[in-house]
Length: 318
Image (cartoon, rainbow, N blue to C red; front, side, top):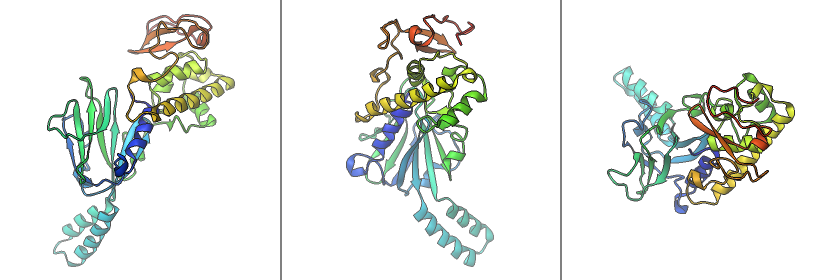
């Protein structure tokens, strides 16, 4: 799954001017959900943003935000509303015009889930392979949301106004690349949960997935199943340093590519390295199944040499 570094680097690629291969400033000419599962919201209609420029591309957690600016359209609508309010035969016409004027921006919030990608679409085939949604622009370019596999969980939410205060973004924790030491400590101690779960669940901090969680725990030399409300001050310091450095390293790698990397390409010490030698101590990297996903770790670096039991009902090491 694309995590914070992969999404952030892709945001930067998409944010380039059109002349440099990006989409910044391109005017939307259409949006087409190719599969019925692609669009997660009914209102506002995606077509409301037609004719509006892509003002900027942002990221929140692991979500991409395509933000279209309708301020020029809103200004025109305001003028129409004022005229209509003066000359309209009915109050309903004036109310409709004023409602149009209030909508000055729309954001397409995109989550790639496990196998999704948001890519330029030069061919614009009627039935693109793995395609689930398409944005077209008035210069003839297009963006295609694809999703490999059969899960079809990637999708698009269309949000009017501030997207950060509305679903699906309103319950996210602080972005992992921006969290402070005090914020992290407060989130860790708010409730006792397994460290690996805390890193992945998006409510304490946002943007970390399975790979980063494995690498952060290893770099911090902490058991993935340590209780978050029992971490010492030194362990919290080590965790924050690991979060910062793991994200920085992954982002530097991703920025060196011209497209989003595949999971197997991303450098790491323990993630999907089961059976390999730990690059820090030489011990064998182990894996344990937990809540339907694999947790990779080094016993010497993280669990005082002890091997975790491979089932979800074991009493994990603290």
